[in-house]
Length: 273
Image 1 (cartoon, rainbow, N blue to C red):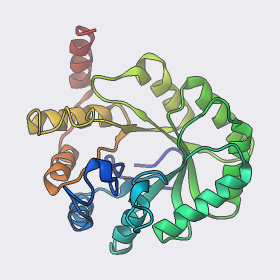
Image 2 (cartoon, rainbow, N blue to C red; image 1 turned 90 degrees about the vertical axis):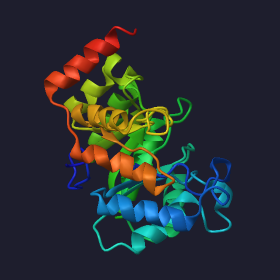
Image 3 (cartoon, rainbow, N blue to C red; image 1 turned 90 degrees about the horizontal axis):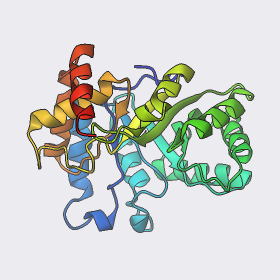
């Protein structure tokens, strides 16, 4: 499927790498890069081509060369598939900081151009105009294929989308928390706004930090939870530290819900409010 109004073609399900390189999440003790390679290879073989990371993911391991971007970069380099990589800028309010941070991310990823570069947080105290200018510069320099945002609400997305449109650049994605039990994006109109603007909604925490995975519920429940989001037009990006986890996730690509089934789920969830 297209990512927003860009030429990027992404799988309906992506993979998040928040835990990769994060020692607090067990990297180096409960799981290793060798295990993550198995996770990565299994995901790619299962049809996943979209991988999401950030400059702050696994920062504890950066000096050792094992932050999330560094691990993902090595694994992506070993693949012969066309992958779509997205990373994020941890917002600071200076235009030159954007290019500096981007070049550092590119170096860690081992690439010259990243497919998707995202604003990680819409800190209210920071100028959206400065962010727009910096991201436009990144596009103009050929360092970025497409621009996205994360955690933007309705008003923030409208403003940033307008600022980028004035520079003839599309905002192609908005990554926010969205899962079958946390549907604020529907209640606030954010999901509909994304549809209206041609912005793909990327769903982080799609399994509610693991509460909807096979470790707690049935495998079918995991598939339903992910298929529900895909049926709404979102791209879920669950994380995975083991082959078993990623196999559960990609199984959802073989599973779909039609409009009537989604409506039934919505009706039943409404009863729990």
